[in-house]
Amino acid sequence: MSEEWIEVGRLDDIPRLGSRVVKSAEGEIALFRNSNDEVFALRNRCPHKGGPLSEGIVAGKRVTCPLHNWIIELENGVAAPPDEGCTPAYPVKVERDSIFLMLSPASAC
Ligand code: FES
Image (cartoon, rainbow, N blue to C red; front, top):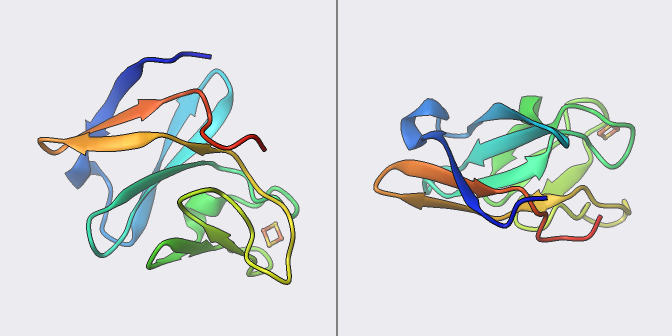
């Protein structure tokens, strides 16, 4: 695990209300951009049955899994009730339109 920020692209590489997948040694990480141009990073695996969250629908600070419609909080990877579970969320920041990611998960899923 790295405690360093790594540059993973530009804000414009992610469509608004869309996502982009970054491959890491720990698996795929999905970067999401919402309508406020906030960026979030989650492991690209739904806590339900591993669906690709990067293909889900982004609304506010949540993404809906494309497989069975679980709703996952983008800030911490936690499934919204009544569903239970979580997927790791990673620290991410945007500076001068560049996106930086830290590979040590902020949440312990
Ligand atoms: S795999 Fe995501 S809701 Fe089932």
